[in-house]
Structure formats: C-alpha cells, structure tokens
Image 1 (spheres, rainbow, N blue to C red):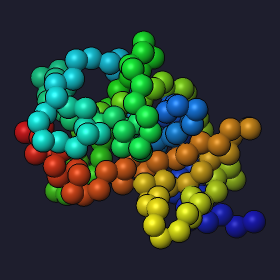
Image 2 (image 1 turned 90 degrees about the vertical axis):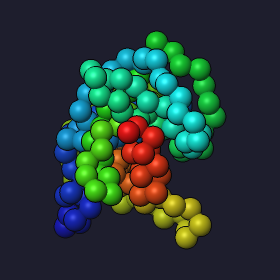
Image 3 (image 1 turned 30 degrees about the vertical axis):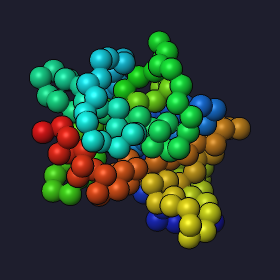
Image 4 (image 1 turned 180 degrees about the horizontal axis):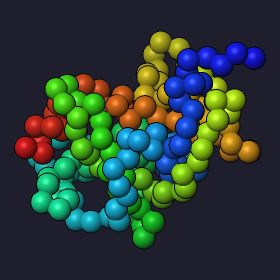
Length: 163
C-alpha cells in the first residue's frame, strides 16, 4: 500500500495527553515545554475557553482550556492537570501559548502505517484541527493540528489579550 502525503507528513513523535477518556497527540516539534498548573489570571472579554494568561519566566502567555474549546464538560484541576506550552502559527508570527490538559501521557513514535486520515463527519462539523488518527496497539490517538485548534480570529483575540 502506498503511503499518502498525510501519513508521511504526520508520522513521527507526538506528545500524547488525555482529555477525559480520549487520547490526543501533538507533534513534538510544536511543544516547547510541559509545566504544572499555576495561577492563571483571567482576562475580561475573552472567549470562555480562554482560561487567561500566565507569567512564564517574565513572558505573559495566553492559556486555553482544551476541554472547553472542544465542548467537553468542565472538571476541577487535579495534581495531574498541566499546561503544554506550544508554538502556533499566528496571523503574523509564531505565538507561544499554553493548552490545559487533564494529564500528559507519553511521547509516542507513530509510524506512517499506523496513521489513518481524519474521519469526515459532514460539512456541519468542523474537524480541520484533526490532522489524522493514529492507531497504536489497541489505542486510537487523535492527532491534532495545533495550528488549527484555534481559528485565525480566535488566535488574534488571544494575541491581543496577552499584550
């Protein structure tokens, strides 16, 4: 079977994490660091999924709650809740931001043969932020395109909030 461009471009190392019962992955090259939960300062007039901003070694960065962004129910933070600091492509430059996840799992090497295209749910459901689905053993890993998790408009609003 010939590899598709998607399989080839998505293959590689991914940081995996849990949101509820589901396992997600982000390309490791997009991850700057993983930090424990810290005080998040709420910013007025930002979308609900924007938890606020944090001071990370003197730099103010926005923090997004992925549970809320994905329409999942809110849960209390635990000792396993953490922030994955990522670099995303903004409108004009790269943006450093944090995403809150329930628990970081591990770094997985996902081969091209373990990758399936993202399923289509029809025109009414936006899944452009899903790069592909990884099959690792009995697990399915939803591989995210972190640059598309937020729309350009949402990203611009977040960039403004953190200035």
